[in-house]
Length: 283
Image 1 (spheres, rainbow, N blue to C red):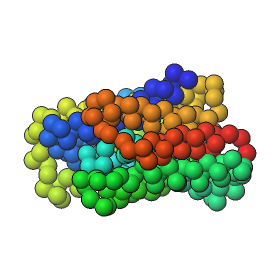
Image 2: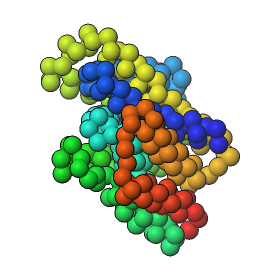
Image 3: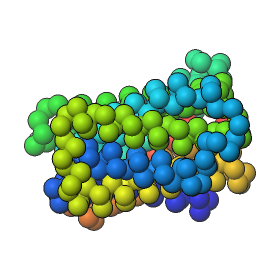
Image 4: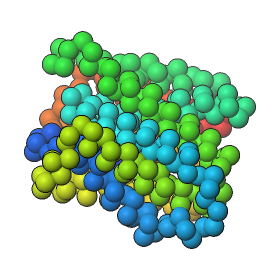
């Protein structure tokens, strides 16, 4: 259970760090680029790909996921700064709904009545949370959280499918290292094309990027350890992790950034937590 809590804290820390980037004028994309290089280096130290034999089947999906990771992470940063840390984390965590639905159709897994109720409650809760009356960002303030919801769901479904089709228990950790390596190359290329590479001279980009990279890799490390510990089934770990991330990020947003949530949004958060509990229950 401790490992699940640590994973949830790391996930909540993403949006909190992005919010601090905005407060201290740290350039977002250069910090994200540094973050992926740091996560890649951590992967090389803990799970070097050359230590698991044949990885020829992992290169292509690693490149694809690397591109997707960079896109979703950039959207997460923008959303945390514009829509708030709490709403951003909730949108990303509720992508579990898409993961469940994707798994249902791709692998013919069963979802019980409570699971379907949970999916419906999650979508309603997400709608209540992402819409905000009187939002300074305008009527489209829901768009970034919604894109994160879709993007995170695509990442989870792709990872879930690739774990079943292309990876084994021996090379799955090395696969994540390859994904971080791919993401670091893609983000660096985008940085150069956008002519933002000069921002790498910004000291704050290095401090923020290193912190973000360590947290990014730690979240993965704790999740793998939690899954391998065998104390809880994966069907319980993921919803509990998401519930914890929602609660931690909401608390931090209120205490650290004075974010104010409406009654409608609190109802939405409650629905999201209840939905995750329903999804966690056996079919």
